[in-house]
Each structure stands twice: as structure tokens, then as C-alpha cells.
Image 1 (cartoon, rainbow, N blue to C red):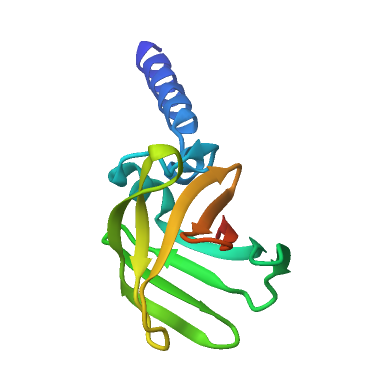
Image 2 (cartoon, rainbow, N blue to C red):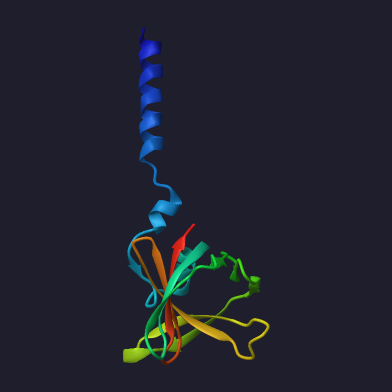
Length: 151
């Protein structure tokens, strides 16, 4: 009888332990400002596949709703892949992180990459994750803010 009770109690404790453990993805999908974080923190939170929902901003400030299933995949080893249904993969390269001074004497790490068809590197500010949305901003005047959700 004691063995049976011990087995049942052990099994219940294991079940409770495994149901209380957090999934790594659940842990990462919450509100966090990223632009003022150390580089390893930024990299940890942004790795994965992200679907572009919309972009907002530009010279005449407007909202662009993505209808081409645009995506961005960021890997732990500093690799970026971007594309959509119309053009396929348009960026498949290494990320170069550059520490740069931004507004109010604050510094951030810019996510930069080069891609064929464009002469200069692209620079993005990894701004924050708000609820399930990654917000990335163009580094420059009159740029866009890009809103991605993880998939």
C-alpha cells in the first residue's frame, strides 16, 4: 500500500512540475523595450520567424498593410532572411550589429545588412516587443516603423 501511494504521489508531483514549466516562446512574448538593452538581450528576444503585419510612417505618414505575406527570419547566429510571396527571398545574409548614438544621447545597436539591388546597407532600430508585436524602426529621418508578429 505504501509503495502504491508513493508512486501516485511521485506521478502527481511530476505532472505538476511539467505543467508549471514555461515554454520559452511564451516567456519571450511580452512587453519589453529593446533599443536600450545589451546586444545579447536584443538577440535573444528577436530570434525566430516574424510576419510583417503593417508599416507606418514615411514622408507623408501613412499606413501600409502588408498583403504579400512578407516575413523576416532572424537566427541566433546573426543571420537574417527576408522575403514575401511576390519576390521570394530578397535578403539572405549576415547581420552586422553597429552601436550608434540616437536621440537624447542614448545608444542602441543597429541591425544592419546589405542586399543585392541596394547600394548601401540598411539600418534598423530594434525598438520593442509590445504584446506579441515586434516593432522595428528605420534608422533615419522620415522612416517607417514595421510591425511584425511571431509565427
